[in-house]
Length: 102
Image (cartoon, rainbow, N blue to C red; front, top):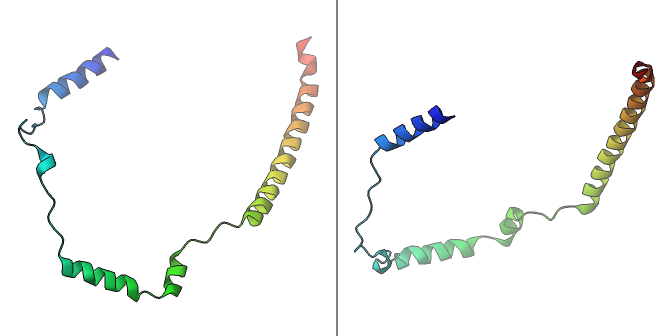
């Protein structure tokens, strides 16, 4: 572990440190460029042109809770059956290996 750690340290010490911005550079005063008002108007026009039917298609339907519960119940039934089978087999194994302790 120690040799591996020292090799990582050696590899890190070889790379130069990342350059830092000068301390006097105040980025809070820099403003983002203004957007073109014509492009904004075009985008608003495109939004209004969409029919409501297309908007409804794009929305996600709420989950069907009853279908989910039915599917979960079926899965749980199969799990219970398998667990019962496992318990029966474990009981059989315990019966057969019971004589070995004496």
